Length: 327
Image (cartoon, rainbow, N blue to C red):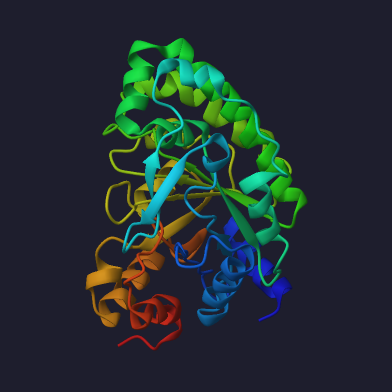
């Protein structure tokens, strides 16, 4: 299918209009090749073409946001594909104040921009972490939370630097071929922070970054990462699409539709059914997702990155489910 036809399908979903079929996408890490920009781009294109996806989410390697600040990594998770930290750039409160804003066109950030320029088969999303999520990765979650509670001024200094860097990088992504940003927020989970704690940083840093690029983006997808989400806090954020663990931790697609008229991305359980289920169970899950919203305002997608051990049969089933005859 031509690029323009994919855009027409996605744009119909964004507006809540009828579609010939519900748009489909999925994504995963490629740790075996993601240290090489061209090999990384080729793996992304191969996944896209194999399953004829309507949106390409470019999964920069998980360490992209921290390497230029001195973080080091050793190996990667065997099924999730994210890189395992060896040394965090932030260990003490003073380390937050030493961070300097990065030039988005240089170093590891610039390398990620080169990936975006290598293909143009469908609507493209570049992956971006919100400041609070990047800060959590920079120190490790426990240290990040401790600094927020005990030395907030130092942490806020780091968050300001990260916000400046991420805002510049988002606009550089848009200038280098991406159609939009997949913007991940992790801290808005009651398993990590209280509502007041997240609001103290989310409203000052996470939201302003997405506000800065949303107007220039044709397709922004806000990813709410984790469980026990502060969904009502985030549902008013400027974005075209919301994505979260709808199959693992609420709200369901049907309930979310009562909270927002914006397009929803989800319906596929990347944690359990995609890994452990049969193709028939995956097909049933996809059809249930479509039924929850009557096929309108939906992009079929996993709640987060698909594990590497997902079978090709289940991936194929998730893509072809609505094209198969009902039993």
